Image (cartoon, helix red, strand yellow):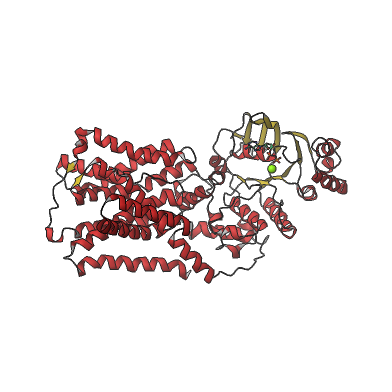
Length: 604
Ligand code: ADP
Ligand code: MG
């Protein structure tokens, strides 16, 4: 805890020192100019960090927003006679509008398209600025009036403007990191499919993050235009500006709060040094390129995270097992979000669902019903399509045919997060925790609904965090809250994933092989947690190969083979069903099946 507050303390002291500096030394414009350029780069790197550090969507054209802000303020100033400083915030608005429009197009999909498009956007902005000469004066650029204040302390107002904007940017970024919105962005970075499954509306989150990452740069652009008193398309939309931003964040540590600021200060100084001593642009590019190579090779995480890692090793957190499973079942809440007219009817109804992968039909007209309050099992040989069926039910994949109804409401067309918001949770066959997040952050990440209030709720403290801690206690892992999720054993990760799903206050949880690969000593804990939750009103659909466990825990049992259901019924019937034994021992025979057969016999 002490370490948590230390960076803020250092940041506060540095801020104060920087705020006092011009008062102590007002008559030296050069160091002020160097410092204010550091602030400007830090504003950009810190903003960039929101979309590219937190959410992991790398923007290589981020200096576009600086150019947009500059042009907006300059054009307005030119046409209205207002001082560019007063209209600089409108530059921020332009940046946000462009980010939302461009983001709505590019960020609907996942992956690398975004990176390419951001460069394309930057270059397009430059071409527009050249060609819309009626507005921008084309390649000749716009010359603004000189600052109205005394030239003797010329730089000081700019110095404070940028320092103030930098403080706002860092506060804003820090606030985002503390909300569930921020946790959702990190979830997107680490595993976008999983993020969607726990209720994160990935499209909205990414667009919003892109917009958040543009505003302060746009405002700073307006101020910068006035500082330079001249702007032209090539200077305002320079690719080198974007490279400096990315480099700053990489050097300092992307994804951290202060890393990009630290990196920007360093890179800005290096850039200035290279300009003064190296002379031309080529030397600068060469030096910056060498730094990039060095960072990638020797400090892949950046300065700040490397230092933090070292610190954590020297000051380890102690952990003890808490065994409160069962005692805290009252913390479980089940929110009924789809009011069903009679309160009756099955909770989940799968009818004729089909999924093909090329020539392979993984799920073939499957039917399945999960009654409210049941622990329904889905068993079947490997490759019979169970996981695929789960993916279709939760929306990680789209079915080719068939209908899926949740509490009577058709859901097969809904995106995964909407299904999560309806009360449908799942865990994965191979656990998909966000390994770089702490256990607590993992549990806080899910969003039980799509409301803004939920999105911007505090994730680190307050109601959400205390609920997450309660849920960790339910699965017995309360003491591990501050650990990185990746450091836990596999079985512990399964339990954390269960706690994570519970954050959605789900009505139905799909468990994909909850005991698979888990140390036998933890299997008992997992089953008792499932039973406890079921008593509290949670319905389960469980895929599991541990047949004794299934026969003991579940009723009814569905048996899957080659993508379709071949038998269903209570454990007593499944145990003696010849079709079931054939499915395990027939064409799908494999060494593991003998164990299954043995356990089926044992329970007969
Ligand atoms: P189970 O969970 O019952 O072991 P799966 O649903 O994982 O089975 O797989 C069913 C079949 O679909 C397998 O033959 C598997 O190779 C195939 N399959 C699963 N996912 C994909 C995918 N994304 N692309 C292509 N084939 C897939
Ligand atoms: Mg599977």
